[in-house]
Image (cartoon, rainbow, N blue to C red; front, side, top):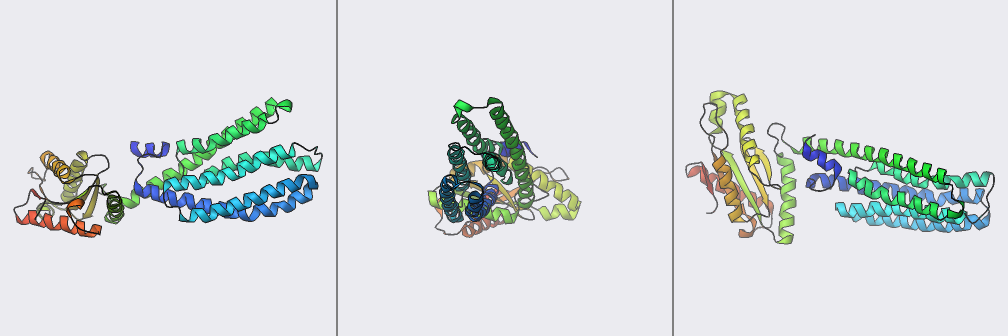
Length: 365
């Protein structure tokens, strides 16, 4: 994994939009699955409580279980429409909060009664609820910081639960419980990071062109549609540049396809070296590339493309420089409601650059 991808494992900042979208889908889907299962099994457990405890104990537990069931149903319904990573965070937080609040109530509730034998043994199982909840983090593709943020309240809650029994506090047992909870948190975080790492690799392989490392056309279209929608909503600038390497067919015909591949790889590396963070280069097909420049107006885009042209696109096998014909289009200057129209405009301007002698930028009619 690259240094950037390792950074994605540690913190959720600057994730690719496609990665965030897929993470959101998985988190919300699993939240709904678990909420649905808990909504079914939580009220059924009332039967076990009735069998194990006297009425004064199970009455309170049954009421708490019914409230928890209603909360799980609410999560199941509300999570259906969640379509952003922040909404996914909220749904996961709600899912974890319900069993932790039930734990705190049941812990204090049963402490009021003298339970012996089977009842005492059965009630001990309630003390393991925080461990189950922390272990449940392992099924979510979370970053290290996210795991710590979700686990920290559960660790704190374990301390609070212990403090509620301060007069009869058994410090060795409490210390052992907290230590075990921390170990389970570490294992859960490792499992979540492993899922996220696997997802990053899959997304990278799915969205990138294997030869040049640029975004593939399919993933590029998704990115472009997303950037177009965001720019429209926020009335932000969005520039597109269609780049076509000049006389590339001659390279393949004269020097062979291996030499042509080397020219493509070197050209894309040169372009990416001079792009800003957030700019996206897509291999549109053959020697054609589409450059997406979010939050970039016409003048800024033209200046960036001139820097790219000045640095060059590498060399042909015979030592002559590789040149490119470029067409530029900017959203705020066009009256269009679909990103394909903006692509078509930049493509047409690229052909104008070719017809005008190649090795130039056409940025208007």
